[in-house]
Image (cartoon, rainbow, N blue to C red; front, side):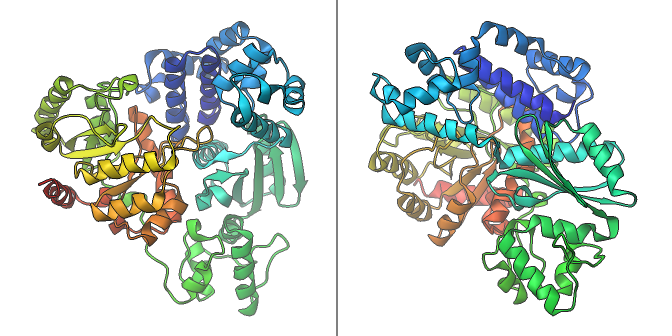
Length: 564
């Protein structure tokens, strides 16, 4: 069983627990599922997942050994079929599913359609237009019959397929398409395969090892499958010498590819029936060079002027994963994380980090077991002791809850004793644009916030986030030299690549890319998250956690001077 399949089973458990109203346990399974999906190598034993809670480890062990999950079956038997059906709809909020089932007596999809059509949902006390629109959106996604994927899902699923095929003798394989370009939502997973032998052999390996519902299309070099959850998997299988030509073509958008094909034809290259340049390039870099173009990174291949810029050698040198020197937003079991300080440090060392910021929730975040002053001081003492003999520098920090008026927890003395302060909002989604914006600008103007965490507060695909005047937020970040976070926790991706671009246009100088880790396995999110920054065109110097330790401390010191 692949990591992706294990993760899907854990997410099923999360949905079922949510339908029981067990939010805390549901959250644990969701966070565990994200950790499993982010692993690069398929799980072979419990030793590979020691960072997971004990009960989840037992479930994963059962899945690896038997392919089944008894806890999931127990939950399915306890929860009425009608509620499970409604709760499994795309983007359906569990609390809405429970309300619909209990208050409206809906037990099937046809029942759900009927109460929307006849206006019963809208007119029933406690529902209204907003919930009706959310449900209508879920029904529409269900009726389309195709499942869309977030960037994290596409990245993880694609890597799972890649690992599986390599384990079964197909060595030349890469994920392409919108996932490789770093789009936040993908409609399918594209995979390019280069083979030395027969195309039909490769197709048989794919069909034998990947669980699918039906073959959507099969002709020549192409094989399209629809998996059991209605995700479309598109395989392009070419002879190995043409692998990089096919990879470049299957990665680019339609507009980008049309421009590339035009240049190729002008330069005398032939184009294959499938659309890629019919020439055995040894790399994508060689392909672009032969077209007299600067190498265009996958994340920029959208047809938005990158080809013209590449012809003049004007493309920026984008940030890479290897540039990252640390993570500045992580949680431990002091608040709502599941691993200890020592576990987080061990994993950060494995990633080759120079530093790691420990930013457990502050006191006001009671639902997240926020730290009062006494517990924060206790954590600070432990960190100071660990720093005396550690291989990595731990930064003493806090994720400060931004209150109703922009106020933050703790007194000036304690705040000044911290190495780093990130500020975030987790409540008040019902507030209007003026109120929400004022909360953030008041907090930033205090001088105590170094990084604004997950600025919009969105949760993909459940919640759109706060109503904010982003221009005012950007202006305030510039004025007080605050870095804006790109939180790459899978259901956040906040800021988005589009908002990063807007922030740059407003003069925001610094960003921070962080995993918002709640267990050690979450540190793996950084590899996919960097794609969001690259898609926005960010360079190494724009991102504070690419700084070496001395440079980062210098930047944080200039931030402290703002408070005096």
